[in-house]
Image (cartoon, rainbow, N blue to C red; front, side, top):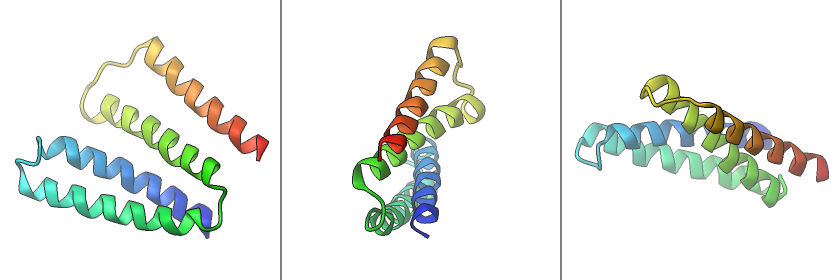
Length: 104
């Protein structure tokens, strides 16, 4: 259950960041409220996940996979440029997360 909550927190964080971009600096209220709501849900899920999963691993997954998710959302949803350096750095993040997981 803790792992499901952690991955829910990651997905909710990515969705919140997309909403944050769409809010245009909190000038669009519907996206602004969505941002706040999704961040609250993400923190709630993360809080319960952190009770059962080692904090270092859980936070590495939350922040690392969240970062990869946001970069992918930028590529596909906001037409940001994907290049070899960005993709390589994302791969390094994933490798680091795998390494932390294997060392736990």
